[in-house]
Image (tube, rainbow, N blue to C red; front, side, top):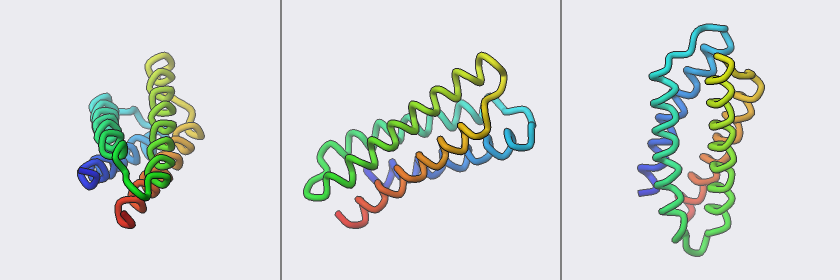
Length: 115
């Protein structure tokens, strides 16, 4: 099930990258893409948390990766709230959100391949 969570995170990342590129170009952000990105990332996070709860001997790597992804999710919620209030969000915050999410993804991936 971890591979499914990682696949969902990867698909969510493609949608997130689309949003970031459009934001950097000052183009309108499609609501459907925002929704798909959030739903996929949220579903992946819930699945990863369920799987990570029984991480076994390499639990520390899974725990750090999951905590990083939770931080990225909270940042994503902050971006969403800012977008809903102002119609846009700060590009630097979106870049940091993407980098934190990538870090969590890589840690979770490393945990999976080394477990």
